[in-house]
Length: 154
Image 1 (tube, helix red, strand yellow):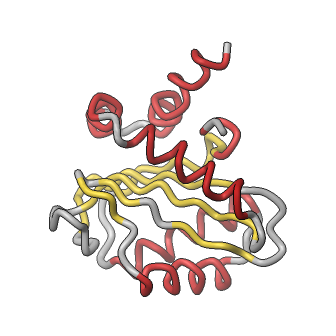
Image 2: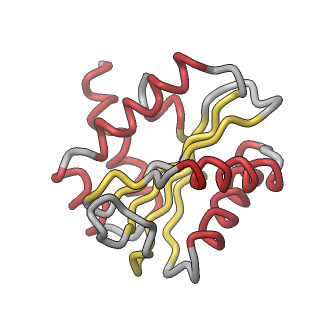
């Protein structure tokens, strides 16, 4: 699974700050609705339910919130760079500034896991995270996220 299959350029955003985890998840849901037509209320509820099971931060300032959404027909993503990192109950207790959220169909077992693995592999690379943090242009962020996989696919 490739990130360019999951992520539309218009689903990549830079936000100055988020006042809370709850507000950030609402903003991510708003992006999901505007770009993919995902019901905002359903996605906020699903993201919060998943976060209540345990934090989705993976350390090093990265979080991978994800939720299964009824009536969604494919896995899709939203990427947010926060200019001011947010406390997100991270495993390493560091604030988080890179958020790659996945929305998956309710019964998308393997596809959801493949998407999470692809995102995790990408954001585990310190050089990619450094490039993301050094750029605050959404188009550039999209290119950084998808360029290595496009090169490998060619």
